[in-house]
Image 1: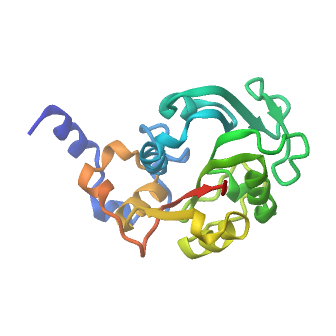
Image 2 (image 1 turned 30 degrees about the horizontal axis):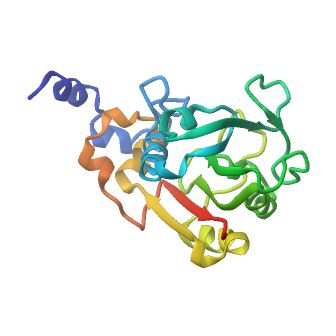
Length: 223
């Protein structure tokens, strides 16, 4: 057993203690223990589709994933509804998005954001509008998650069928691929606030469509 494996085993709470807790191990999503489990799957999804993160790329709040996974990025823009975000190059509400030019971006990275937008159909329609023909939207949404205490509006938890119908309205069913990530163990771990480093690679890699933690959507604007 390596030192890393021993540390992971020591840090990993016993399953019985996890199931019998009425409060999470972490009150801050697991950030105090490492990187939250849902972020592992967000990164997995973007890594699988990194070829799409090229040209002029738009991302919400910051350009972390554009920098991390971009290949051949010519311009990185940041969208935020909050004008106090100094990283934002575009300040707009995605449900209106009248300040965002049409057909301007080759890729839009929209991760873990749509659950905070009540008019989710308008947000997806505007994501379609701002892409150039052939442009790609890479979106992730939660299927299982605690309520965000810092957010006054946390509206949605989605599934593969709901994402398929929502995104097909704007992009067309033939232009989208929808994938679930996670299993019952990783869902429980995330709700308890465990970090993904406290799980094994095999535990994280197991996909169970009955227990999705997040949903990844790749949607292409037809040329």
